[in-house]
Amino acid sequence: MARLQSGFWSGGTSDKEVLHMAKKGKALLMVGLAALVMGAGAAGFAGQALRPMPSGPTKYVRFETAASHALIFHDLEQQGVVRDGRAARVYARLKGAPQPIAPGTYRVAPGMTVDEIIVALRKPVQRMVRIPEGHWISRVAERLEKEGVCGAAEYIALANQPELFEGMVDFPLPKDSLEGYLYPDTYDLPPLISAKDVVARQLKAFERKAWPMLKDAKDPHRVLTIASMVELEAALDKDRPIIAGVIENRIKKGMTLDIDATVLYAEGKWRVLGPGQVRKVKSPYNTYLNRGLPPGPIGSPSAASIKGAMNPASHPWLFYVARPDRSHTFTSTYAEHKAAIVRNRAEFKKQEAE
Image (cartoon, rainbow, N blue to C red; front, side, top):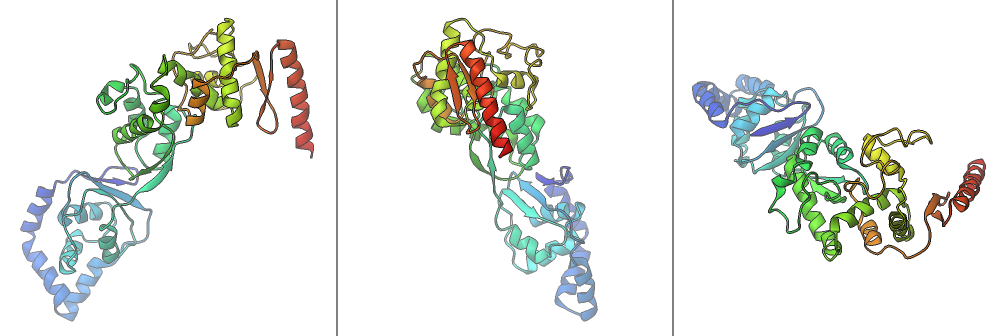
C-alpha cells in the first residue's frame, strides 16, 4: 500500500488493478516504446508525456511491501508528480531501473524528471526527529505530526493503550497510559512511519537507557513520577537530586507539592501560570489541591532526572525558587522562601536592566 503525504493518502488502486489496466493498454504501451526508440515525431510525443510537472511541494511515498513500477507511477500520476504514469513506467523499464521498489519511504516532488524520480526510488529517506525531555504525550504527538512522521491522534490513542505493547519489552508496563515511559531522545525515523512503530521504538529506548536505572527501585513507577516533575522543575543537573529531596521532604510532612508543571499537565497547555490560576484546575494531577504524588508521570524525564529521583539528596529544605542563572535558592521555612523570592526577583530585574 502506497502512502503519499501532502495532506492526504494515495488512491486505493491495487497493483493487480494497475497491471490489468496496463494489459488493456498494451497497444498504447507498444506505441510508447516505439516513440521512445524510433521516429522523431513519436519521440516528440514521448518527450511531452515525460516532461516534468510544474514544481510543487515535496511528497513522501511509503511502501509497506515491495512495489512495482506499475503501482508507483500510477499513484505518482494521480498525485500530480508525473505527467503520464504509463510513459514513465515504460521509460523506467527502458532505462533498466530496478524493480520492485524495496519497502520504505521515499521523497519525490512535482518538477522532478523521471530520471530524478528513478534515482530517488533507489534509497529510502530517513529523518532525525528530536523528542525533548519533559514533553508529555500530547506535546510529543503534535511534534511528530508537524515533522510529518505520523498522525497526532493515532499516536495519542496508541500511547494510552499499553496493552497493545505487551511482550515487546522486558519491563512491566503501566495499565492506563505510557506517559513517562516513552523515552525522550533523537530518533532516526522514516516519514510516515506508523505511530505504533514510533511508540515501540520509544519503549525499546526506555528499556535500554532508563530501565537499567529503575529496575532495582522498590517502586519504579513512583520514581518515574518524581523524575518527571524534577525534569520540568530543574534546569541544571546539580539541582535535580536536591529538588527530588524537596519533594520527598514535603511528602513526609504531609504538605502539598505545589508544583506548577502538574497544573500545566492537568490543563494540557504549556503556558505561564498566574498566582490565582494554580488552584482553578480541578484534577488529581494538580499538586496544589492534592497531597502526595500525582497518579503518574507528567512527561518523559531524562536520564539525569531519573538518577536524581533514584538518589534524592538528604537535606532539610522544603522550598525552592529559581534564580537568573537557572539555578535555585533552597530554603527550609516559608518565611525564608518569601525572602528568597524577593531577592531573586530583584536579581531578575537587575539582569533585565543591564
